[in-house]
Structures are given as structure tokens and as C-alpha cells.
Image (cartoon, rainbow, N blue to C red; front, top):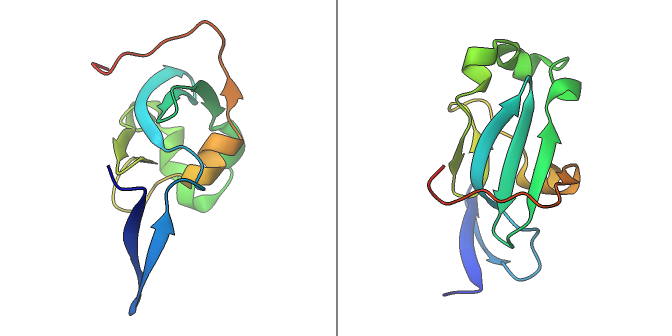
Length: 107
């Protein structure tokens, strides 16, 4: 498996070293009102609270809990649609570690 990947930003192509990046989301489970349980590529399971983000216009659709439950993983990033996603570094760094919790790949 490669330890790097290519990324495109406008007209610039650059190489990202995956060994120095924060882990990316692997599995996700909607736990309770506006909380996500996320398994990361390093095996950690963490809880992310969406409530503080609901005040921002970009996340207003997430106030609808049935829409919020539709979170999914695309390329290690939590997304809801083409317009709403979470920064993967923020997701990892601002989540709280859950002890004695395991999410399977089947979720």
C-alpha cells in the first residue's frame, strides 16, 4: 500500500504524505441526537458532537435529524451530500476517545 497519494487543488497537483496525516474515518454510526461514533483508520473509536456546528449556515440541514442520520464515509471523509462534509482533521482532533467500544466493518 502506498504511503502517499496525489491531490489536486485547482491547477496544482501535489503529493500528500499519508504517514504524517491524521487518521481518516473508516466507519460511522449515528449514536444519538447529533453525535457520531467514528472508527478511524488507526483503529480508534471516537465520538464527535455535531451540536456546536449546527449554528453555522453550512450545517443547517443537519438540524433535521433524519437527514443527519444519512452521514456516510467517502474517501475517509464524513459527508452528507455534495455540499456538506466535515474536515477530516477537525473530526479526528475534536472527537473524544470511546473506551471499550468496537465498530465492525459491517456498519
